[in-house]
Length: 122
Image (cartoon, rainbow, N blue to C red; front, side, top):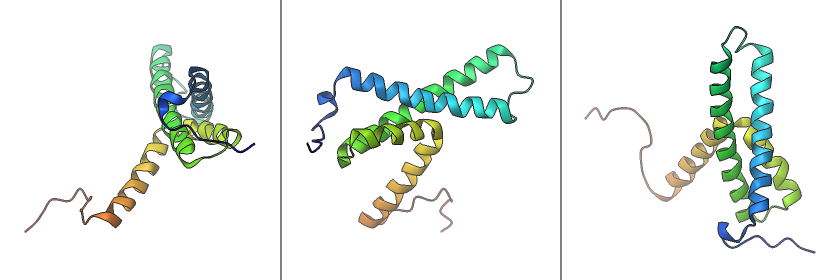
């Protein structure tokens, strides 16, 4: 049976969204634990760790959800979109930066807009 992508985000069941968020959060948690083990939080306070973990998980959830919607839009099989979503959650804000670069490139192909941060020196 061929996978038929949903026509809108409202067509996706709540259970699917919960699974997507779980996978995204799991990827974010793996990234956080890796940072914790390697170097970043050796002497940090517990409250600081919990705040950083919360922020990382929120970013991971958003990143995973956006990538999940892209996967559904492109018709990616759910068995493949699950690991892609987890990786996006692991990448966190880096996912958003990568998508931003893709959108800038696509936008430059359609309109002549300068996306640089440099001031106009005319």
